[in-house]
Length: 115
Length: 115
Image 1: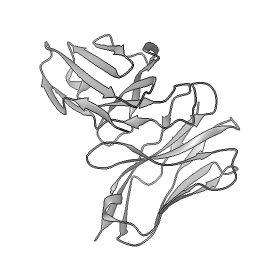
Image 2 (image 1 turned 45 degrees about the vertical axis):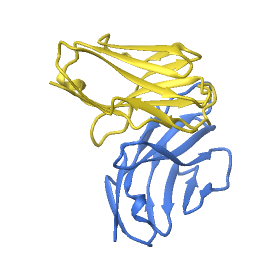
Image 3 (image 1 turned 180 degrees about the vertical axis):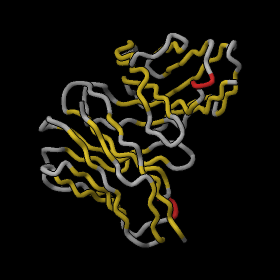
Image 4 (image 1 turned 90 degrees about the horizontal axis):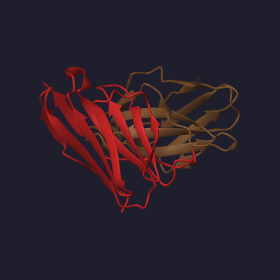
């Protein structure tokens, strides 16, 4: 079975600085998708960024980018120019490419942004 | 409209009560999900509806009974719950269940407390 690990339960970053959240996963599949979801204190989870495993190019969305290392099974999230609104729980998630697969979520990393 | 709404926001119930949680989306999505989330933990999948039919029940106790009256609405009927069922209940929807690339849109959740 696939597993997702986030080794940093909590992290903090100074406003305007850059922070990297780590995620590793274990799978025997070659085709899959990886996601980062953000859950602010209001609790509504939103998608931050997603990556298709067959694409070598790292996904970027404005201040958010990933470092996808397929061989190492690593999928870290970099947040540049951190803002107070980035404070949230961040979940890394894996999903098989195959039909109708469910998410496998990591345990989450709580990010605090210091003014 | 990219919103999933959930009512009520908070619910306190006794172990003998019967209550229902409601979820609604108007994005034309044909897959809807119920998740249970304990504090500081990732969401755990409970049920999946695809085209208004129950397609996944993750071995959830029968005191939780899902219902999908139409493509926009998802209910979770609660009866004879236990204190350990206290959690945040999240609803989500996606365009189709089949495509693993599809983003899931989450609602803000219902905070349930069982006394």
